[in-house]
Image (cartoon, rainbow over all chains, first blue to last red; front, side, top):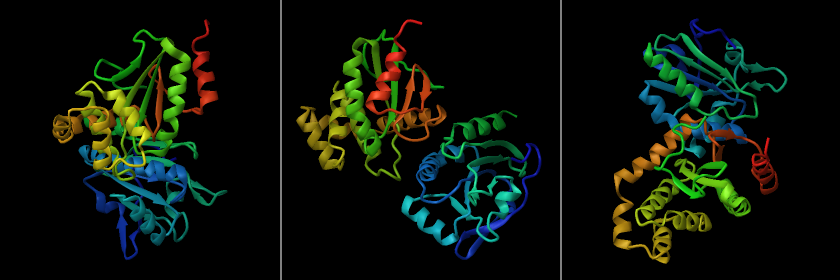
Length: 153
Length: 174
């Protein structure tokens, strides 16, 4: 994992089949980067469905959630539609896993992202991070605790 | 860690002074919760006065479109002192949690239907369900059913044999 209190590295990935999203476009908002291994797998979909249901709590803290995996933009589109997600999934697909590597959360053996969370402040500084065991859904309490802590300062 | 702790605002079943307080965050439309329902009934029967069972709502609406409605229905039944009867009926009729299905259950439980129909539209009850959900998220619930034993999260196997074995282990004198 990257250390805290540094600027989160810039990236630009496909958010839809014809549109890219750059991290810098989210400046002014807090950003939750949720790296996860794969669309459709059981634990991931539970984790993303939970985050989908907790979006309103994230928004209360001016935070946007972005999911990132190595699946393609088309796969993401089908997954998001099927699960009725109201947040963006980014495709770290080509070159495969480049952004995950940049954030030190790429699993070379599986060829997937690890299950990892970063919370960035309004200026893109990393304020909290968590690497979850791959088979365990980390829940949303750690993210919300981090956002609450940021409000105190 | 469970936030907030179990209080008189919660729906409880069993002995107040039980050694074990088992809390479930559940969703009436979740198949896993439906699977857990008869297991919990058997465990409650086995442990008797050693167990206090508490249920809080954790509906994931985008996956389970009838879940919030069902949770609100249980809270509306509580206003007529039939919370646990509705709780059981919802899990036993998980296959039909449409509004018609829920009204049928209300009728079969002998609820005052006019009051029930009005109560299930009360924003206070929706707020209560949402408060339950938020408390679950803050307590670290990552899916349903989410169990807490004496305010500590329990992530292990909750099939009948291992779950009962674990709980019985808590009763043994140290």
